Amino acid sequence: MTKTINTKVLVVGGGPGGYVAAIRAGQLGLDTTIVEADRLGGTCLIRGCIPSKALIHAAGKFHELAHADNIGIKLPQPASFDLGQAVKWKDGITAKLNSGVTGLLAMAKVKVVKGRAVFSDAKTCTVETAEGPVTLRAEHVILANGSLPVELKILPFGGDIISSTEALSLPEVPKRLAVVGAGYIGLELGIAFAKLGSQVTVVEAQERILPLYDAELSRPVERWLKKNGVTVHLKSKVTGSSGKGKKLVLDYETAEGKAEEIPCDKILVTVGRRPNTQNWGLEQMGVDLAGAFVKVDQQCRTAMKNVWAIGDLVGEPMLAHKASAQGEMVAEIIAGQKRVFEPAGIPAVCFTEPEIVSVGLSPEQARAAGHEVKVGMFPYAASGRAMSMEAAGEGGFVRVVARADNHLVLGIQAVGVHVSELSGEFAHALEMHSRLEDIAGTIHAHPTLSEAFMEASLAALGHAIHI
Ligand code: FAD
Ligand code: NAD
Image (cartoon, helix red, strand yellow):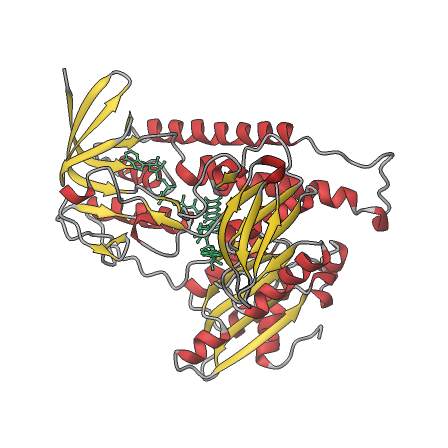
């Protein structure tokens, strides 16, 4: 017999969008139910942000140990890497986070239904759970179904052709790894595998790596790839693959139209992600689409009354912190609060070597928007802290873009070792509508990498101290 649950708020999807929306709704006293088909935590906690950063950390540590002679660390024998052990450690982290989310939902008195929600109308869905079918009816539905990797017809996933999900749980480090797409995932994971000893070759359709970031920011990453033997074929088109295992070959066409092949053991396809809009009854819900995404307004309302959508399902940037911020907002709106999603900026971080951060407008974007700008840059090469962390030779820098007339900060970008940890200060400065003088006038602790932000602001004002 089908069990029926009536709930005030139904959240579909337990990723960083959905679980945050559900926790906040529960905290606000709303009767809330969340449905998750797989494991609570979603792409981010289970097969995305966290597991990839764990693997990147393990690879970075291994690589550092193997290159530490200059600072006096000599290993009695070359370090070896046990990927099986690293994957076990990474799985331990995801398990801990998964049970953490379960606990937080329980604390907020959110009911969890395990299974896939299939909608028959905007406010009704059925879930086949292990205990039998459950029908859920809700006053408000928050769609947080997330995204899936884009599959290329000529390189269908399966066997040695893998997506990021399989790349995060390989039994051994592939000797030769071909990567299709030099975006976020291709380079974050490609670099990690290169550090672990894979011979990595990247094929990218565009004319440069990380086309989402400006060329000045991606240059230090380009240099790292070159120095560390990663081959990158730009303006190239993959045409297919043949063979299996040791005989596997990735076929591609060069910028000049010449057919070439890359012998490899695995092909990692990372050409983007697409919103998960199919096969769960979205078409029964009366919502509109904007391209492939679910269309929402600035409060994440869809075209159907009291159906809301958040996260990767609703568009770029497809980032975990955007999903969470939207989830929190929607819960608060349902509870009667006045909220609109209009952040001054959403920080984007790429965990490459070195790392890249960008929030707000680049100099080019600011000029294109009609601003006359002041740009200040401070190189890691002039930072004592960067030197003491062996980070000064990587070409890293912090760059601040401000309006020339009133010095209002419009954007902040940086590239360098550990810059990801500065992203919070950058986003905060932008959200607080800081002016260059606010940042320059804030005493930054010495020696820290954050001093580079203060110095870049001083540079924009024309009086940096250390350059
Ligand atoms: P998801 O996290 O995709 O969650 C959606 C959930 O909905 C899933 O758990 C799914 O099982 C469930 N679901 C879908 N349909 C149904 C249904 N019908 N019924 C029940 N449940 C359903 N972002 C960052 O900000 N920083 C990073 O460092 C970063 N690294 C990444 C690394 C990798 C390898 C990948 C793949 C992604 C990474 N991302 C990163 C992107 C980030 O994971 C996503 O932006 C984020 O997870 C989106 O959150 P979401 O809640 O919208 O969707
Ligand atoms: P992406 O959009 O970052 O990069 C895809 C790359 O593939 C682009 O450079 C594109 O030009 C290239 N490409 C597309 N089709 C191609 C083809 N046929 N042949 C060769 N190259 C091709 O996508 P992704 O790396 O798959 O990541 C997906 C999304 O996940 C990202 O957009 C981001 O939102 C999220 N993500 C974020 C982080 C982070 O925040 N650090 C990390 C990983 C993933």
